[in-house]
Image (cartoon, rainbow, N blue to C red; front, top):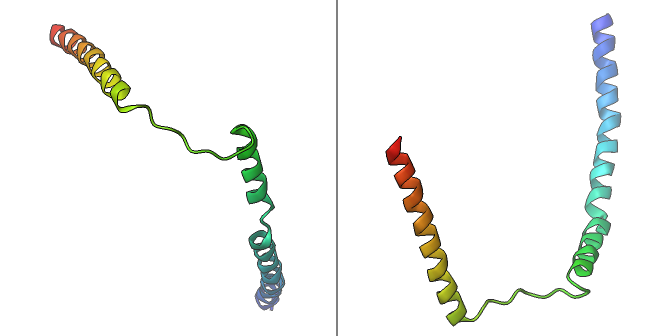
Length: 86
């Protein structure tokens, strides 16, 4: 008898709580306040307007790229020589 009463009580709680959960989901889905607030914060950080980043000129990119790769190559050779010493 106690098990039957416990099951009935649990079923009643689940049935009553289900509508509460559904209501909470409905409220979450309908609220766009967070999205609006996020968009506003992004606009403030970017200086008031949403702008896309600009790419550097092609000539500058090629020069800095070759300089970067030579630095990386030098570091790589240094690491290899240290590894060979071990």
